[in-house]
Image (tube, rainbow, N blue to C red):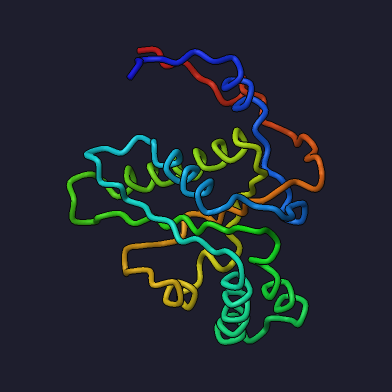
Amino acid sequence: MLPTRPSADARKLIALRRSISKRSLTEPGPDKQTLDELLTVATRVPDHRRLAPWRFLVFEGDARDAFNQRAVEIQKQEDPAATETMLADTASYFTRSPVVVAVISSPDPTHKTPVWEQELSCGALCQNLLLAANASGWAACWLSEWIAFSPGINTLLGLTEHERIAAYIYLGTAKDTPLERMRPDPATKIQRWQA
C-alpha cells in the first residue's frame, strides 16, 4: 500500500464527475463479475472501527419489473391520492436502466461509533460506486424518490428497524451526453478558521 497515488486522470475524473439523467440510461449494463468488482471497489471507504455499516441489494433482469409492480401496489396503499401518471412512473422505475443497486445504510446503533459517522461511511460508498462505474465506462445516476422513504418498500426489501435506503444507483450505458449544471462558487463555501 502506498500512502498516496498521484493521478492526473483520477483528479480530472473527480473534477468532471456528472451523473447521467435517469432517462439517458440504456443497455447494456455491467455483467455480474463486473458489477461485483465495482461493488468491491466501492467499499474502499472510511469506516471507523471497520463496521461495514452498509450493504447492497442488486436488481437485474426480471427482478426489476417485479419490483416495479410491487412498488405500484405499495404506492396505492401509502398514497391514495397517487395519480395514474405517478403510478405509471413508478411502474417504470427500475426498468430505466439495466442494473439498479440499492445501497442500504445499516448502522449499528449500539456501537460506540456514532450512527452519523456510520451513515457518512455509507454516503462515501455511494460516491465511490459512482466514480468506479464512471472510471470503468459505465454511466450512473444516484436517485432516491419516494421508494427510498417508504415503510412498505422497506418491508418489501427486508430492511431492519435501523436500516434505511441511502441511494438507488442506476447503472448502464449512456445514450446522451450529460450537460454541465451550475455549481456553487467555492469561494462562498470556504472559510479559514482563526482563533
